[in-house]
Length: 316
Image 1 (cartoon, rainbow, N blue to C red):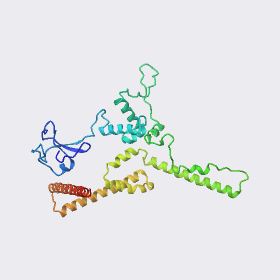
Image 2 (image 1 turned 90 degrees about the horizontal axis):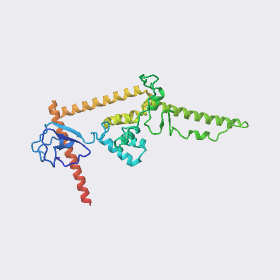
Image 3 (image 1 turned 180 degrees about the vertical axis):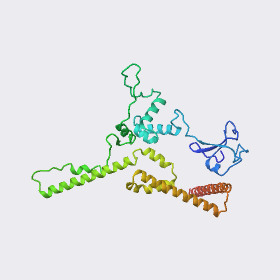
Image 4 (image 1 turned 90 degrees about the vertical axis):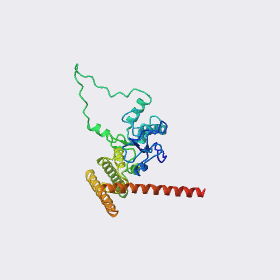
């Protein structure tokens, strides 16, 4: 390690050409900052060069017990069980973020408790010897159950939430009664209250329809897609969310992607203009310029951290 930084939970760069530095040191490993600045002649490997072949290692992206589970997901699963307790699989799945409650339960039972996997639903016996059992045809209810089944507080078969929009709307009707001797003004007031309640129900239904049509029930997939975007693109998507109510899902997606593409083009144009101002004309010169730029940024960050640390020590 060149900068002695702890890369236990960080992405690191491993040189594929330099031999191991000894049984106690292992291969040449660089952090992202050292690699971006082209560090050479690291301690224990004086022959290391920046043009050596390398491998990018994410220490928690490999699988341990199951090929479908990464080490990071394993740690999140165990943390979730410790936080929420055994059996609260919905909360544990929320903590893991990328697995359903059924997958979390099955994975823990099979790989940690060494229990047999949960059996699939038994097949119906065939009517004749050797006759193949036909596969069950998925129905509309099955599709409805799958949609939003992993969302806590949502009942997919009923299409309702535990907490609805304007959840106390029914309170105004709880003690309302119509009597034969009601005054016309009082009866008119009661009918107006019922009309207000119906308007609240219409708004509640409109919001649920919006959630279903824009596929917001599968919020984990939506969050994963948003995490892949850079920060500036995520901010743009957040600013455009209020306009989704005026579009269909396809129309809104087309609007967002068009504006994101325009933003990317503006960034590329700004980068080319920056190259032109600094006299960069070729790709090779651009690579050298970017390396120098990253090196300056790292040095400035280190200088700021030293200044903050020095001011803290002086106050102590």
